[in-house]
Image (tube, rainbow, N blue to C red; front, side, top):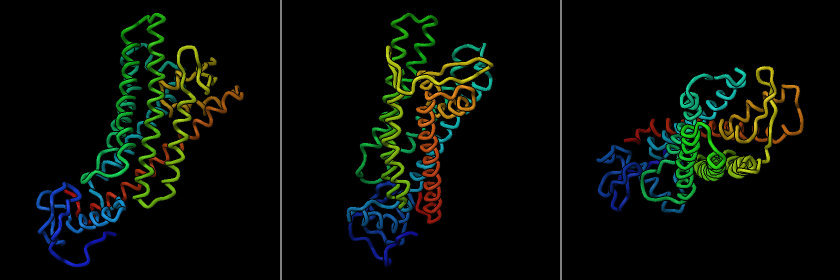
Length: 318
């Protein structure tokens, strides 16, 4: 529940509105901000809590900012589900999905989840209104990483589109672009889940906080183990799947192309085929970590959505 001021009094000190930053000095504590109509009592409670060295709980935050948090989580979960679905359709069609169409059209469905993920991270790491707060480094690092990751993907696509028959050096540049993409994703994952751990503390959900901290370490390790560059294959190696009656080897470069969530249907497809060798073990581990991360993002989204509903119910928004 909210933490209103104990009595209706006139503010005789400088208190910034928690939604727009307007100085509320001279207003009554049961009034509303003249700029954005946010509740003055909520701003006073947040100001006092921040002044005591703590961080305000999510339910006292600007509802618009909290909505950005849960919509960002929703976009990230949707992007992961889309990547997994595309991989499943490709496997079920024997690798013939969208075959015969121009390269740009065939690659468009695989670019959509990258765009959605970038937008999701951007919304999830939106700056909260009011004075600067601690923990800005992970938030800014996640934002920069999301944009850089999308840029690396577009660079790889540009190389593929503009070089129909790439020569050796052009193909090496494409492989280096994919390596850079993987390293950037590892840094972004660490920063994003580190930032989520801070938000979990403000939600009062310690179980979410501990899981976010564990994934902030596990996800980058998983991504870096799959990293490959010209002349070196990643730790995940190859995984054999039966597709269209033929055995196909998927390597880490293929995993980079479909995204980490694509490891889940690939692994599920492989373990049900006749080939069940030890080379599947790293992929199973990567799949478990990926599913864990997506489920945790969904739980964060639910928690943020409930917080948004709570703040909205008290009329604290603009």
